[in-house]
Length: 261
Length: 174
Image 1: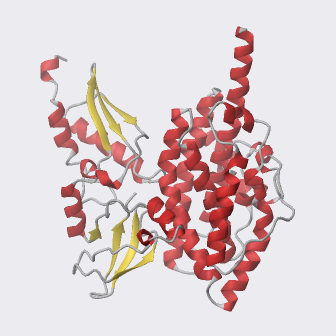
Image 2 (image 1 turned 90 degrees about the horizontal axis):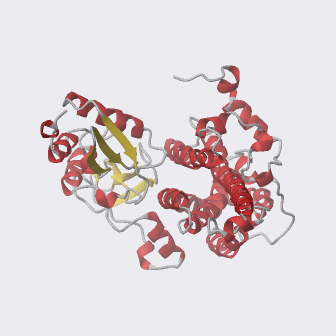
Image 3 (image 1 turned 60 degrees about the vertical axis):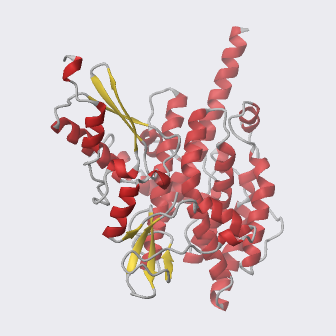
């Protein structure tokens, strides 16, 4: 009996660790992608806005990966998890690692992610783990501003000039096949939902569809229908792009292990 | 150390009210509402601080400043604790803090206008989703427009006054 409970607790702990890595890796990888724009955006205000969004996401990463390290119980902190894991150990959505492309594609990626992120955090505010609920309460307020901004810009550019409309349409078509993964239940998700720790990914799909359809309609872009959906990020099966992100992000800690200043 | 020689909690709050925010130095950490508790735990003074934004780079500097200010007052044993919940809200910025922000050229947050509330209203097509009317902190005109969701820091948005033509920061409600 005691052994069964111990095994169940271990299974739940490892499921929770995987889940927290997913939350932290999404914000880390997307935060890094956005920071690539710093100094290159089409306008100063946009440059500042993207850098600030990146800053929010990296700050949120510290909360999620910090808790992941605590749950794992092996003495790894947020920095260890960010800088000393390799591609196969990352649990972020493939969408987060998509290259920036032009500014329209960056904004479309941001909107599709923000809509999911906002709804996921809203669900997590009711988590049975008060540490998760506290992070979700804190970060969802920030993410509401991300979503407000990316939604506004998707509408302005989609419903803008012929050129901006065409670019946003292309971005949407390119990124759409990376959205299905957000709602795929992985092996550990049922255990987490049963324990009240996190809602099942598929439970977010209907509300996300409504929100995204409303915005895309206002943007005169129309919502793509179904089609093939990529998956694998949440299991560590990534596209070739993540390796390049990590090569740049982790260079210092790999070249000079333990360096601090 | 004898308990009688300890500074009172009121004195500590008063000292903290002179620790400036590193990015907006006209307001203090107590004006911002980020000091959630001050208490003695045996020989240690425990100051509970809540972060403003998750990624705010000022957080580490604020902690250092608090420790330094208290050490200058002779308190060697200071322990800072982070409290995430309830999450910081601009509703906690004091009336005095709001006045100081205005005088400094930053429009104070308009309570009850978080992005979350407005976003849902806008998606539902309700009137509450209309753009905010932020008063220009220089000429008090209400004819202003938002330039960008983010200003010089994540907590602010960039606005422009259409009467006096000055750009200014608005401290967003969160």
